[in-house]
Image 1 (cartoon, rainbow, N blue to C red):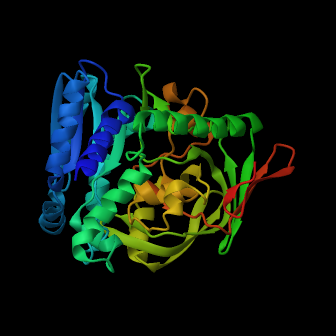
Image 2: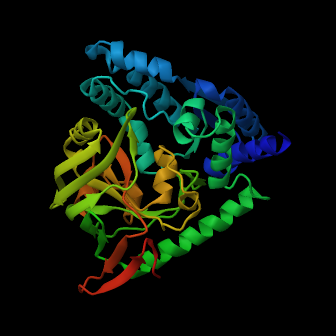
Length: 410
């Protein structure tokens, strides 16, 4: 128990001190499920110890989410998101930082009309457009951490004794986020340096495109003009470093909107809008998804791709070696925050402005001219495996091995 409390303290310390890197006199906004009361209290204490002016908590609840999705009249789907967006706009003006604790319930909306789920999700993304635009341009500090729940633990460890499942999930979360290290903050600083070395290498290479091959995958992805490979840390508008995702094992950049061709097959389940999408293939022509199929959740995938025009294009390409801490655990987390950091992945939808040189201050039109996609949505999906190879293609067409057998070849 004592060790658990130590790791738990380390975990919230990482979220506050490294994740959002809270500065003195800032407001911290904590978004969390109602099952995470103890964790939120610890995070609030840590925030005030770091000099927070105020800690504002926004609660969410799986039961209420399902009730609202099933029963809210369609003409009222935007009411809740609009109220939240108004509040967040004021908080952003006050230089708030945003720390989100998320939990996984991939079956939350199973059986709910997919059309309603899609409309509710789209209404939320549309109302919160300013907030998500701020995320994509590093306007403010934000970070996402996971909080285990019984539902999530039962999904991950169905064959373990019920009384052990939560402990096993917490152990996995602590290990993945380095909260179990002797000095977690120092461990994260060293890890970020290693990721930066990879992004520096790729930025020096200036590949025009990447070519992916694996079972079910043969895909060429052109990269945006003046693209930048980005590592785990970011710099906000005030010049403060933060780490948006904890854990993070990736380096990523922006694909060119019209430059993706071929087929890619997923390698891990995708938990999207309270439903699982699994065993799916996407076929691209001149950047657009022109065909798709899925072993599970095909209707949910269809609704995702119909979110808007940009939802049929890619907005992110991310590289993660198969031999990495989370992948080495041999677990499927049913939570994109973890699963994407065990696998090479892409994201359907909007690109991040900071993945092109000077992008943070560019207009939508200027970003589009560089090849960046725009959409209400941004959904990561996993494609990496021990069988994947990736070639970097230079401007003159020459190829260099970048990944072999799922791992870096550099």
